[in-house]
Length: 132
Image (cartoon, rainbow, N blue to C red; front, side, top):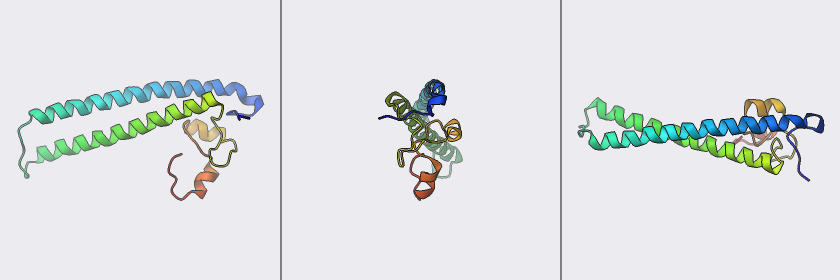
């Protein structure tokens, strides 16, 4: 038996959650593409730049900017994966159900973090808090 996002009297809100996740997926895909393009452009720029010596601040800035974009891209890709997994839970009828204890995740938590996988109680019991 699968559980739904909300109790029966609130089940009409489940499509709204799916719509929100679809919009978030589109935004996340656009962000990933934007950052990947920025990183690609930086890579091309780095190939055509003159080599900097160790004392040249501009070389350090380019390296720092590239590292920043790499970190942002990794974060954006993780978020996109979380959104896709949340959409899969919607399709499976398990969205809004804590993966750890099986109880419903409060609506307020899902509104704040639509990709939430666990209720706050279970997160508080998990010292690692690996993924929401």
